[in-house]
Length: 311
Ligand SMILES: Nc1ncnc2c1ncn2[C@@H]1O[C@H](COP(=O)(O)OP(=O)(O)OP(=O)(O)O)[C@@H](O)[C@H]1O
Ligand SMILES: [Mg+2]
Image (cartoon, rainbow, N blue to C red; front, side):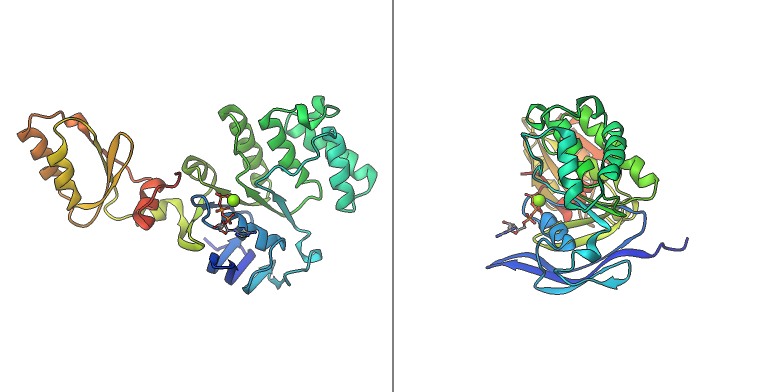
């Protein structure tokens, strides 16, 4: 398969706020038409990365290229092909949905007729047309999030940067947002998506960068990331009376991480499942206390960083 041309490229991007290194020497190349995910916990640097792309934050060092052309930190004209869905809602609460689109369309320099036409199409596509004249302050969380997304699509960007666009949204509305974005991507829009929800990255993003402390720790197609994740499985050990010897033995077989109800063993090369099962039998414990699972992005993340995606 020939790779598509890169539409966005970062080389050696670093950004500090005083002593906080938000981004450290980030290199990245995004191909046209990708649905690319940044997966990382709070404070990893995801929003900073998108802000540097958009020119809202200048990088300290490094180069950004859009469609092959180097772009200066303050060159907004070169960034017209980008649309940012910010993590914090950026809407005028006291205006109606349609008037929000008119204001943002005006900021983008779009003509009135264009705004009305595109605005209607977008409102319809996210099920908000009937509510166009209602004030945003009376919208549900999911409706606000959908409006927040379409505002960034008015000027018809080629690349959409979505910064945790489903925060505070119930599962059904989240699903509607996923389907909307997947549909846009199928029609050719390149999407960069930040999240700390593993399930979102698993569903939406074929290629993923795992990011923590401002560094990209791994970046590849999901299946390759998981295939490279050590022994190819993880073991959950239930916290139950009598399981202490199993936990102790597991400690020497890889990285053991304590969770609320379980210990999670991300195996190293010394994994000996038979030893764990033997201890269970010796002590007359239930086999169900031990669960062997397919590797997950969460497991990979733990392996790379020793911590969980969500605090
Ligand atoms: N304007 C700023 N001034 C000072 N520190 C900042 C600023 N913006 C970000 N930071 C710091 O940079 C680091 C990365 O922040 P960033 O917002 O990019 O993380 P994130 O991955 O988006 O986190 P979250 O999941 O919580 O949104 C954090 O330590 C944060 O406190
Ligand atoms: Mg953020």
